[in-house]
Amino acid sequence: MFKGLVLAKTSFEARQPSSGARKFIKTQIFKTKKVTYIYVPGDLASQHITQNDIVTCVGIGGAKSKTLGDIPVTCFRVIKVNGLSLKDLCTGKKTKLNI
Image 1 (spheres, rainbow, N blue to C red):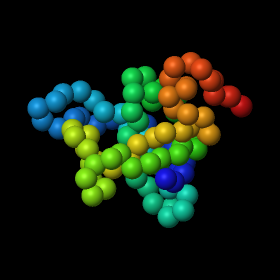
Image 2 (cartoon, rainbow, N blue to C red):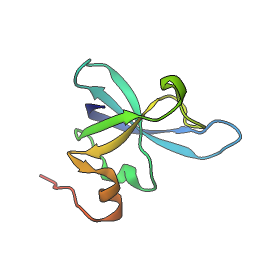
Image 3 (cartoon, one colour):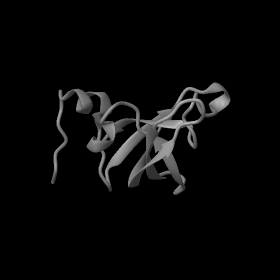
Image 4 (tube, rainbow, N blue to C red):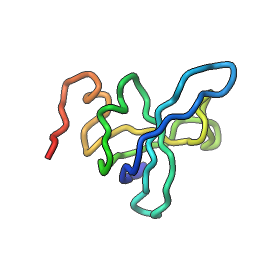
């Protein structure tokens, strides 16, 4: 589990035979200063993430820390945005403060 700073939002095509765009964020990891892509799970979840937010990420669950299923590029996923659960933000139980 690690934290990072959101630099940009983007999307990538899913691998064959699936179709559709998978949402990702380009993130700079605090501890290593490396820039990587992180998967954003859930419908409309990417609209709750903006540039310069702090996100908490975990492994995506693939075998031997690899990618999972048709999700390309990364082996990490977002679980929290600015200390708030991404699941709670998507369901509307909590709202993000805009300062």
